[in-house]
Image (cartoon, rainbow, N blue to C red; front, side, top):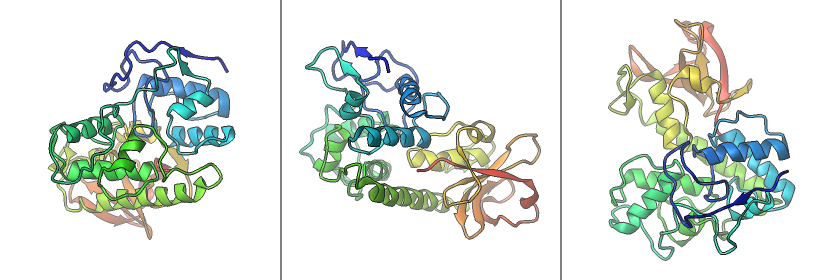
Length: 319
């Protein structure tokens, strides 16, 4: 594999715009939920080292994370699916300035702080900015630690395999800064904790979907004030750090095809188009939750006489 030498001219710079930026691979922490040109470069490196078969699309999704973990296991380093200094070093990717470390949006965070719902101020705004750069916080950087910030913190904690309590303390800040915490595991012991984390993520995703039961159908809608059928799916996954393309037809090709349904999988249907035109989130017990144009967000049986003949398959976006 070729050696990439990084020229870091702006140490500690923050890169926010998805899929755009002048940063070179190695200048920022990469993890699930991000969309960036650096992710595309990472995917190319993974294709060379572990034969990653997912799309080279610049989206750090479940398949990219799985490939990163496979690479980390192969190299005998911490297996967490996050590409930070240790993983970049294993790729033989280094900054040309030895005093410069991999930059992350969380460099300005005060690791000694303890922030929780109700907190306000610059530290909260820095936390929101760090989480937003990782694709886990999508609201306004207002410096107010409200429910959306707490949810983003919980999602990050689940993904980082640390205590999930929605409170941003030293362990959370250290993990955001790319430092190893007491919650980190080695390659030999990581499989169990990863499985538990994946289960917790799916549980949260399913609960988030159920919390929206009764929401209205609004053509083109993407928020709880009103969703269309794809807007509902995209919103729920986005709240759990998984960014999908806007339409059923687009994100149908982003997932991993599955034949044995599991909770959290997305089930697809073909109605008026010769392509995926409706979808729902599988809940288990042969049921799925979806946004019906006539009834809003509801739960329906997979054996429903209308939907069953139109079912065309399922995709998995969680790991």
